[in-house]
Image (cartoon, rainbow, N blue to C red; front, side):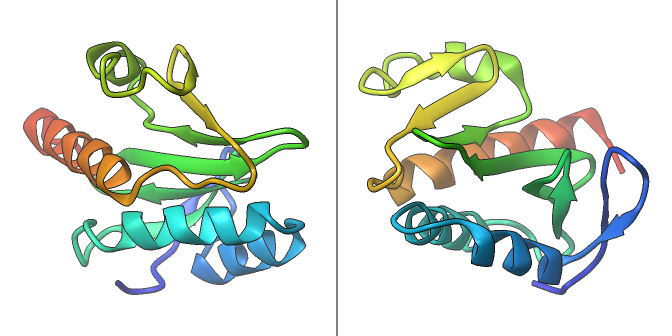
Length: 133
């Protein structure tokens, strides 16, 4: 994966280096947890995908917004950037707190890599189907 730039809400450029800086500021155990989520995402995104900050959160873009993740005081969150995906995968997400477009998980327990990969692959397929750039 290249360190290509992505755009943030303020249209400033950000890079994977910015994600590294974000993660460096996250206290343990959430830093390790998010690192595992990031690795799972990176393992399935196309080489053309970009990584950067979006709305001050680590995010990946591929033919449009793909997924994001972040640490908060009492939990971590995964954002599939397609609100209906959490509804569509309701059965698989039973043990997690969900809301429209958000999946929350413990600071010290990353989402299973297989689940992250499945959600990312679905998002990739959705963006390709829609023909986003």
